[in-house]
Structure formats: structure tokens, C-alpha cells
Image (cartoon, rainbow, N blue to C red; front, side, top):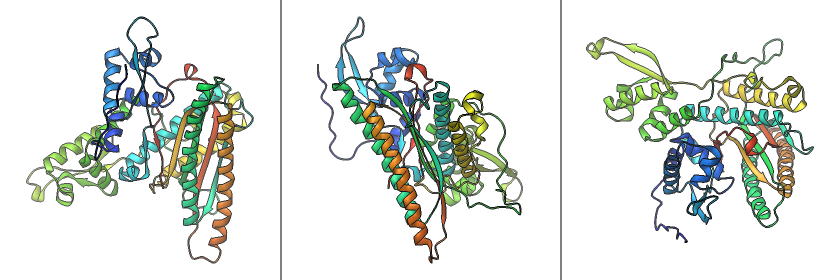
Length: 426
């Protein structure tokens, strides 16, 4: 039996924001998209591998994702046991924001996304070190470097790292084809890339870096809560506008309705909902005057909680003594500093991605070579920027770039962590 894909004439009925809202509406959907980007699966095979409750529940999520073009039908497969043949699907793309979509998100949402992405990447690093796969290949790559750039150099560097991400995804596509026709050992690989603005370093009289003290405490990651919080904001243009405006200044429902439009009662309801979801906090309550006995409540957007590198301190001591872990800790410190000074997401073209790829040996070698080449190209661009800055009135910029490519334990040996990425497209 074959299935003819439905072709649409004219504009697509769903926007990219619609599709992302559907994916993030349930953590199981995010897991489905993440895993089916790596390989084709059907509902019953997904349930047997990753769980998800009942076959009816998993199948309903598959149907919803297919409806919004998040999954594509690939082929019919014979049953693995008694039963009927099963439809197999694949995810044509990851849950990724391009630069245009990313710029539409309020800054608090960008910051929350970014920190969670980095936390998940940190867990992958720790996981690979515990499994002794991180340094199992001598050509693995892990590096970070602060750069002095001008605006032209910054645009060139950030664009190069975005292009590198897509090159690595293409390596996986090519590896899939080679493994299909010439089966061999697959290499489970984690790649991570970052390019972000770092704060201009202010130093005291001793020459020590002055930063805000780190927030203390532990925040266990709850996937369902995380995806649910984002889905509720995605679902409404009004919610997005509220988040954007209240990141700039505290506002009440009546103030927002006056300045931005809308019914003040509906705005007040949305404000309370966003407060309950942890996006807003109450900063002031006023009575008297023209309020006629009523209380006017003022809200503002909440900054994400950012932790120091102790977040991954449960790595065994013998692992933490390796050079690789120290390099990662230093990288994490640069990320934390940029978050605390609010430079990390200050511009929408920043880049932060990680992905789990399945490669063959050729794909591994070519992927690592591409990372190495980009690293050296970035250093050369810094030299060109410095030459342009000589005699120029332009203020130098500080940006940090980071590259990682290492072998990870295969899926059956790892705890699934959902892929949430943002790619800057220039």
C-alpha cells in the first residue's frame, strides 16, 4: 500500500510559530521530533523504545505532528511481531528557531531557552565523560576563545558558525546514505556550537573581574513544566507582546491596554496566567486616586535563574581532573558571565546549538575537520578585525565562540534529553 502525499497550492496554512507551538505543547512531542530526526520510526516502535503511556496516546501525538508538517511519512514497514504493517515517519527538521523567529521572542524567553539549551549540552558532556567516550577518539574537539572583533568581523564569524551547523547536519544525511548501502559501525556524536556577545570587562584596582555573585540553589529540570510554559506563551500574540513590553519596564493591565491596545480585563487575566507560569512577578500594588478603591497591580518579566559550573559538579573526581572537564568548566563560566551581564541574548543573531548525530567513520572525520577549519578561520577573522580597528573610530566588540565534537554513548546507554536549539540564519 502506498500513500500519496498531499500537495498544497498557495500559502501554507501553518506558520513556523504554529509548528513550534505544537511541538512544545507536550514534552512527548518534543521527544518524538528529536528522535525521529535521527531515524525513521512509527508509533508502536517509538512506544517500545522510549515509552509514552499507551499506543493510542503516542499515535495521537504522531497524527498531530504530521498535520503540522513536523513529521513526514517515509514508508510502510512489516510488523516486528504479530500485527499489521506500520507507517514509519521521520522529522525533516529539528525544533529550531531561525533568526527571524528568534527576534520575535521576548528577551526573557530567549534567555530561558538559551540557558536550558546550555544545561542540556552540559549534561551530554558529563554523560560522555562518565561513559568514557568523550576522549575515546584522539581527534575530538573542545575549545572556546574570546575574540576582539569589529562589526564586520562579528557578522562574518557568527555567519560562519551558523553555516558550520548546517554542514554538520549534512554530514549526518550523507552518513545515513552510506550506512544504508555499506553497513558499518555508526559513531554516535554530539556537536555543540556557540557564538555570543560577552560583556566588556570592568576591572577593579586589583585588576580582578567584577561580576554579579552567582545565584545559589538547584533547579531540577522538569521537561513537562518547561515545554508547557513555552507553549502557553507561543499560543498567543498577546502573550508574546506582554512579555516583550514587560521586559522593558513594569506595567499594570490598564497601562498595557492604554499603550498597546486590548481589553484591560483580558490583559489582567493574561498577566495572572503568565505570573502563575513563572514568567512575570508582581513588583508593586497601588491604591487610591482614580482607582476608586481598586488595587492596581504592576508586573515585570522575570530573569532566568543562572547557576555556576557547580551545576555539573557531580562528575567523578577522576573525570573532573581531566583537561577536558576543566576546559568545559571554563567555557561554562564564560556563558554564565554573559548571562549575568545580559549580553548573551542581547542581539538576536547569536548562535547556540547542540545536536546528537549518527555518523559513520567518514562522516566523523569530515565533521571534525570542518570544526577544526572553522576554528582557524575564526582566528584569522579576528586578525583582520584588529587590522581594520587600527585607526578606526569603531569601538571593539568582545565575542566568545565555542566548538565541541565528541563521541557519545549510544541511545540505549543514555538518558534521553530533548533537543531544543536556536540557529541564527543570516
